Amino acid sequence: MTSTEHPVIAGVDGSSTGRDALDWAAREARGRGLGLVVVHALQPARRAGQEAQRREAEELLTESVRRVNEIAPGLRPTTLAPLDFPAAALTALSRAASMVVVGSRGLGGFRSLMLGSNSLATASMARCPVVVVRGGRPDEEEEEEEYPKGLQDVVAGVAADESAEPVLEFAFEAAASRPGARLRIVHGWTMFSSMLSGGPVFDREAAAGSAERTVAELTAGRREDYPRVEVVMEPVNGSASHTLVAASATAGLTVIGRRRGGESLGLGLSPVAQTTLTHARGPVAVVPA
Image (cartoon, rainbow, N blue to C red):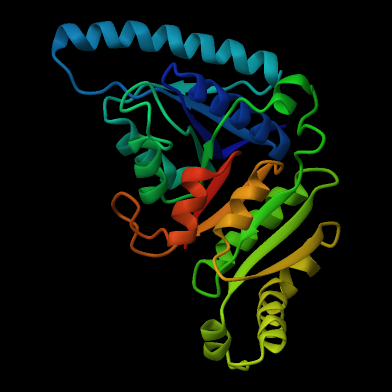
């Protein structure tokens, strides 16, 4: 039985990454017992252009529903074709959604860009977590399981700031919905951050221990709520972006945070989050503070 109160929103545009996002959203909605809404935005145009867009949208949404029915039988997705720009439409819908799922790049823009403007705008402005999906991993195409073997683990990049709590809540829930998944928590630390948290300044071993205690304190309550989730802590000296990008290649999901104030492209994303979102090799969830 699925809940339609806070559904998963899947943005589609006819691109290959849009199809990958739809597939990912369908599996996630079924795995979490949530409803699925498939959205294709009709961008403002002249009357003749709008009529052509509507015909194309109907075909795309019909094909999307057929695809979902094959991937997740019984899910019964609904469709929407709002008259708005894609990022604006998805941001508006995010107010009543569990998550929004989009492809990393759509049909428009420059092919050399690793992250499309609509994906970045949605991740920067949405009121709920946004999952940006990159497709093409052979494991995902060959496996028939809900979450393919070897790609269950959830990786979370955690900073010692306001973004940590929602990131951990989303990451623990994602790991709990994937049978056998571990949660790998990556936390970057420096001697300066150790000093700010009351730790030693010149002793590297003690500074690393201080960072590990910080993460342990952040996760203590969550571990009690999710006792079946195996947690692996990975304090990293320096920027955590390299570790997160490398881990994303074999993770089912990488989770990063967005600080308060993200109302335009990239605003609210730390350098680590921006690098991870741009260069990750698998799905990335951006969770607003």
